[in-house]
Length: 118
Image 1: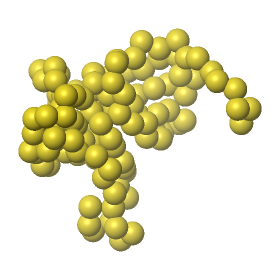
Image 2: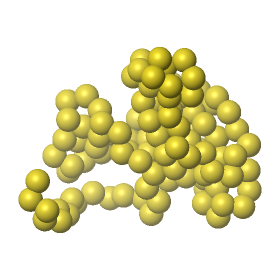
Image 3: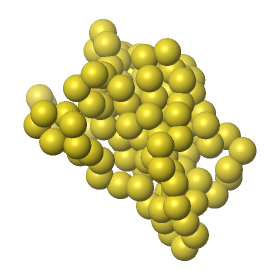
Image 4: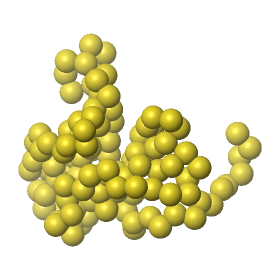
């Protein structure tokens, strides 16, 4: 750690939600344009899944992995006025499953130590 700022030449959406460690030194980015994988050198990203592609007012807001390695990612209404937010589970095959909806902002998922309660 040098404390220096580093600029990465990536085309990123206006609203970013979370970064989660991924295999091989990559990072998962959840953002306004869905869920993408950032390369370890931070020079490229590839789309993983985007279940919110047809919802321009919605952005991914936060994400965490569970003990099974599944990504749990929540969305928010960008204007924070409507209950458009949802919670998705992204499985190992990149399948996005809607788990819960009706939130203005789905934020701060966490799990009990035994992994049985979210």
